[in-house]
Amino acid sequence: MSAIYTLNVKTHADLEELRQNFIDANSDFRHTVYVCGGGGCTSSHCADIVNAMKKAMALRGLASEVSMVLTGCIGLCAQ
Image 1: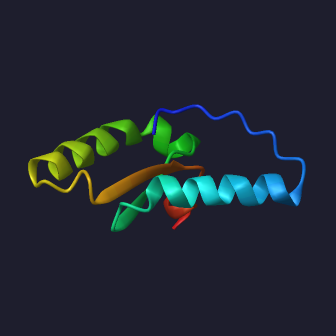
Image 2 (image 1 turned 180 degrees about the vertical axis):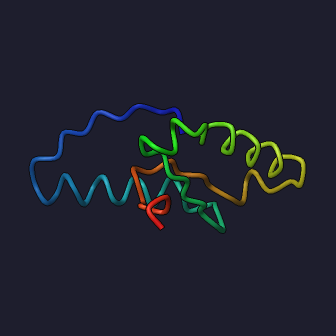
């Protein structure tokens, strides 16, 4: 989750290549957990949640089965 990507998407083919690269990079995972990384969640220490989840997954031997993706705001705090 700490990787920084430089996106240079100008054509549909560029977007399709990006999509396929993402699929290939995540094909070994059985599940994906999406964690909000929007402004409100960041200020509420979402990184602590991510770190605790990673630690718990590692202790249970699930780190190679579960991918965690930090997203933009998903609006849950408004609920």
